[in-house]
Image 1 (cartoon, rainbow, N blue to C red):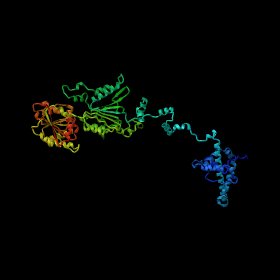
Image 2 (cartoon, rainbow, N blue to C red):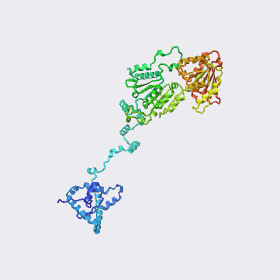
Image 3 (cartoon, rainbow, N blue to C red):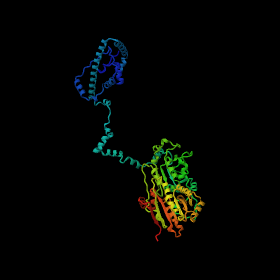
Length: 630
């Protein structure tokens, strides 16, 4: 057999199993193996400087000590020939394991003397093992001091890049900047990396390239391609909007853009000059509103490309929709209808409501119905990849990012309700209003006394019934006498008109009526009866005056059941009395009913200063006289 190599003193007291477990797992074997008879415990003599090394180890901090078993593991790895030794002693391990098993058997059954002897041997082995470990630690410390300049020995230690470590330390960098110890080259490199401006401003001021814009638009989409909705009252208005779009797209280049379906669009939205009735004089505002094609039922989609524009594009492929309230209402439909669609309104980012005052004369319910169906979650996907849709659309927050532009020629509570209840942009609201310093009453040219009578009401809802009751109890009895003939009653609301008409029929009063739904033959007959005095009262609606602007002759007494929506209608109706001037100006009268909820209309008629005095006054009746001074 070959000659055994000398082993380290720290490993002499361990069995084969303990050595293998220590080498493989780096920790002591949990079961204490009995030392066989072959293995003899070696007693290692301590070096001369053991007292000095022990004193130095006692003064060291306990937290900085290295585990004993880790040192043993390192010693096992550094000792050469351990594997060869194990190969040479494999045969001896088998014999030793058999001897251990044979020796353990009788020890468990009996033999207390053997157990005591074994415990003494184990205790002695523990003492010798501790001494051996201390000796190994002392030798390693001495080797570290001797081999400090050895490059091989330094490779085992943890590597720290002292040279470049300071560049990644925030504390040292800030300290250097404050003290000014860093060089100019480092200062230039650091200043180039720092952001001199606010990150949000830098992001907003950054100019994106065309490819970056395309990538952003491709990644972030909405539930529909449609972004802009323009609501206009007539086809003529839609024609003007499209013409403005074409002129804007052609302004940057000398070439004309390609507009598809242009001929069809002009045929359907254009007007025929022969349709205009000749020899009819109308006010300037009427000519401006009702010029061209005044059809109010239409809708058209517009797709804008780089060098072309497509008219009559499908709604889900359009960028802009130009439509009337009635045209959108027929598409949106009502609850319970089978064919209805409003998903294309889910991604509207810009809403433009132009000429909102005209919708008061059409049907305001269509506007309210449209506003209630804007920026809702779509019911159907319509081929949209929702993984690429922005979260604000999926969270139903689109209404908080929509821009709403509302244009009107007058101030009205219903228009203000759209502004206050249906505009939710998170950036706030901006309103520009014209204050009427001078009312339309100053434009009345006839000599006429104007009696303004204020009625009291507790709420806006109850003011309708309060006005009707005030009229039939206090105003109408004064005009029932035959002397007060030729009385025209101006009624702005169609519902109030129907209520008064039914009451007059019930009371069997001598009256006639005209409204926007009356046929031309009936209108001519009613005007003739009223002019000749065959009918004492004439019920006259505001919408009829808005669309027809007929001059009613024979008016001697005028009653405004409610202040007109358009302030200039007040002066127009009053000036109709001049058409039949027969020297009877002294007998003409004008009575106006108003309440505290008619502040805007009252200010437009009499002026803002007079309106404030009339509403704050204790008197309920106020008199104004207009006309030429003789």
